[in-house]
Image (cartoon, rainbow, N blue to C red; front, side, top):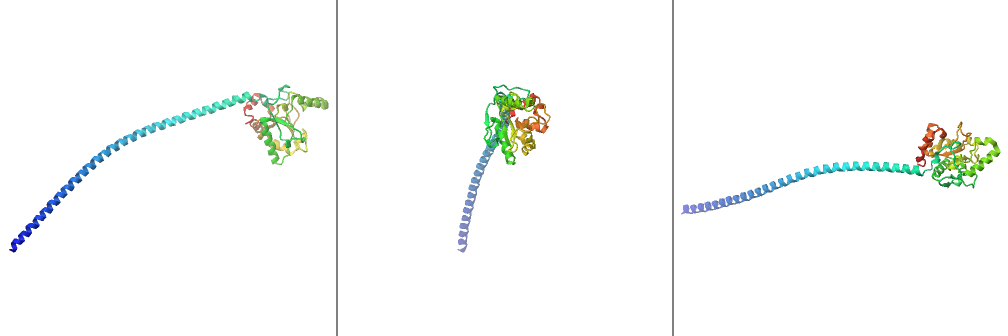
Amino acid sequence: MNNLRHHKHFSLFTSISLLLLIAGIAYYIYQYTATSRLLESTATELSSNIEILAVLENDKAQLLEENTKLGGNLAKTMEERDIIEKQKREADDQADHYKKLATYDKQLLAKYSKVYFLNENYGPTALATITPKYVLPVGKTRFFLAPANKFLRNMMEDAEEDGINLRVVSAYRSFAEQQSLKSAYSTQYGSGANTFSADQGYSEHQLGTTVDFGTPEVPGAMSAFEGTTAFAWLTKNAHKYGFIMSYPKNNAHYIYEPWHWRFVGELLAEDLYSDKNNFYNLDQRAIDEYLIKIFD
């Protein structure tokens, strides 16, 4: 009886074990099938992604090639733009050059003083009033060529800052004023007036770019001006503002006139100062090269 029970228990256990084994195998087969399908799907997706990546790489290569071409085109365009801008600047400079030649008074750098002649109808294009406090005698109105007046004003102001009492005792004089002045000098000094006073039409003062300097202590165009600190300051600094002494020692036109200074533009004045040369020693054609820069 006990053997029979034991056999039944064993058969039940074996049946359950078989069922569990079959269930395990079935689950494993299911899992394997599902995993295989997942792997297959993943492989398909991976393959698709690889193809997409290949397409993207190809597109990238094309974009890089196009970018390189565009970069080259841009560089070429910028180079062409720079060339055009340079040509435009050169054209503008040339146009400005011709404009200045056409509008600037060619008399401004002409060599007068017994060389060239200004007729009675000549006058500066525009005159400006010289700052009254820099004029002698006090209360007198003096005039200077308008475009050059700022250079004179700057020089007077800087001289004042340096403690120099520089004053203008004569500036623009018309043809008639020069005629009257020369007549008075001739009456007083006879032919000797020709050594220090120009005839009408030959005076630099008629240009409006020339001044005679003095000081409160030497209030006129006098040889004593040479001994003043104002003259020493002018000798050292006037060229920086475009002014030169027209008649230095041993010039071929008039007596030494330390008080008589003419505006010729900073560039020409600087070159004359550096070369220790005199305006009237230069050839007129060489001087004319400076005309377009006289107010620069």
